[in-house]
Length: 466
Ligand SMILES: *[C@@H]1O[C@H](CO)[C@@H](O)[C@H](O)[C@H]1NC(C)=O
Ligand SMILES: *[C@@H]1O[C@H](CO)[C@@H](O)[C@H](O)[C@H]1NC(C)=O
Ligand SMILES: *[C@@H]1O[C@H](CO)[C@@H](O)[C@H](O)[C@H]1NC(C)=O
Ligand SMILES: *[C@@H]1O[C@H](CO)[C@@H](O)[C@H](O)[C@H]1NC(C)=O
Ligand SMILES: *[C@@H]1O[C@H](CO)[C@@H](O)[C@H](O)[C@H]1NC(C)=O
Ligand SMILES: *[C@@H]1O[C@H](CO)[C@@H](O)[C@H](O)[C@H]1NC(C)=O
Ligand SMILES: *[C@@H]1O[C@H](CO)[C@@H](O)[C@H](O)[C@H]1NC(C)=O
Ligand SMILES: *[C@@H]1O[C@H](CO)[C@@H](O)[C@H](O)[C@H]1NC(C)=O
Ligand SMILES: *[C@@H]1O[C@H](CO)[C@@H](O)[C@H](O)[C@H]1NC(C)=O
Image (cartoon, rainbow, N blue to C red; front, side, top):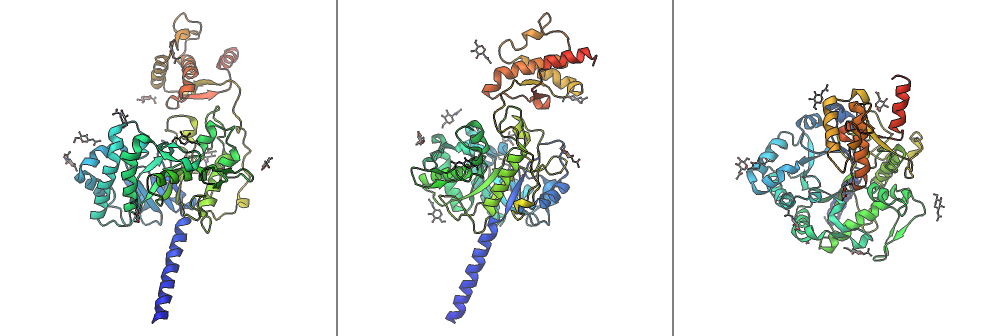
């Protein structure tokens, strides 16, 4: 009898450790849809499977996509839009309605496992939304429970800006404006419901803002001989990702939640971007993502210096390059795939393909800052939409100081009087004044950076009569 019991316990513990190991190999992909040229939901689901992703994260609860996911083995994460949080936080029937409309018709045929409430809410400057976060999560949790959807964890993805200090990692501290009022109740909720701290983290950003002090190899998880030892703990780091993860672990520990599990809700590296952006290329993107996948799928799990052996479930950002995202060029170049569905580079989210089987990558050419002159000009020339170009011109001219004086009638750049010429002048003038303050050369896709002096190009075109 005793022997049988021991055997049973042994089998049970084997089962448990087996399923524990199983979670480590599940890398997913973020299916962002901010593009006007992306493949259909059903084709996209096929592509996600062909990347050998085991999970997919949506930024809403798009019913066409959920329909396409029916019957697949993909574990799915859906999201409550930010703008609904204030109302949901005070209205249980609204929370119930949301769950009833967006989860009920699809669960369990769609393996919905994570319900994320808002996206990077604590990066917002809107206090109403910030303070509605935890109450909204509680109401969504109540709805999930009353529908008996036990397999679904409720969480919320946060960015690294929830920390006011992240270096050295042992100094990790949440921002003082949110630490007591939001982070404590949030971590309490996540701990009580056995959910995760969902974190969006991009070593690309700290590296690209300080590429002289942070080595690129260290950010790409490929450093062989670069280490950093945290003087507070004596822990030794071999890559920037671990440092960032541990700074969050130490911040949680500081307010009494040392054991809450981390879930990387987004990570990635841009495969392209603007001319003045450093290190944005296919080589680095492929290297970073492949190394992250190798790290988080390692068996046994490697964890981080502060949590050796921990399983870190991970979503790679993103499925596609998305042409309708604003901001700098990198924002539109995080895809594993081009919008037409072809690979930007080879990648296997299961982590099973040995690196040597991948084709050689194009050598990077922009790992040093670009030192030449850059202009911001109209991107589509004569094919640009005249109405849109006119409004963008008016907008640019309305910003800054005397931005468009030279293209007013009588000004020294007035002739030749063409909308495209004037808009190129206005974009360059705007961008010169605002780029250091975060202004971008984009204008909804109407503008692009160039290293060719637009004045010379113009003269040449006049000469050749084009
Ligand atoms: C929130 O509720 C108010 C009052 O019921 C309503 O006017 C508003 O449109 C709602 N907001 C959203 C985003 O649904
Ligand atoms: C709560 O939400 C429901 C919709 O589910 C709406 O009918 C009701 O008016 C809302 N209550 C308040 C107080 O806004
Ligand atoms: C630790 O973080 C605090 C802010 O929370 C900062 O003032 C201090 O300089 C940091 N310590 C080190 C050694 O960087
Ligand atoms: C938002 O909250 C912060 C910290 O609690 C406070 O300093 C700030 O004044 C608030 N802003 C508004 C607009 O209420
Ligand atoms: C977190 O959850 C664990 C296990 O459920 C519990 O033992 C612990 O007391 C909780 N921590 C806090 C700070 O509530
Ligand atoms: C570290 O390795 C790189 C090549 O991977 C080499 O260029 C560099 O000199 C090495 N640095 C040290 C301190 O050994
Ligand atoms: C898909 O788009 C990429 C990038 O624009 C292009 O290089 C590739 O040829 C396209 N593939 C197909 C099959 O059209
Ligand atoms: C130009 O843009 C405007 C506003 O977005 C749109 O209504 C119009 O259809 C566009 N015209 C063309 C020719 O695409
Ligand atoms: C415009 O001029 C004012 C006063 O000279 C200056 O304070 C401001 O920074 C200028 N703005 C820009 C965008 O250059």
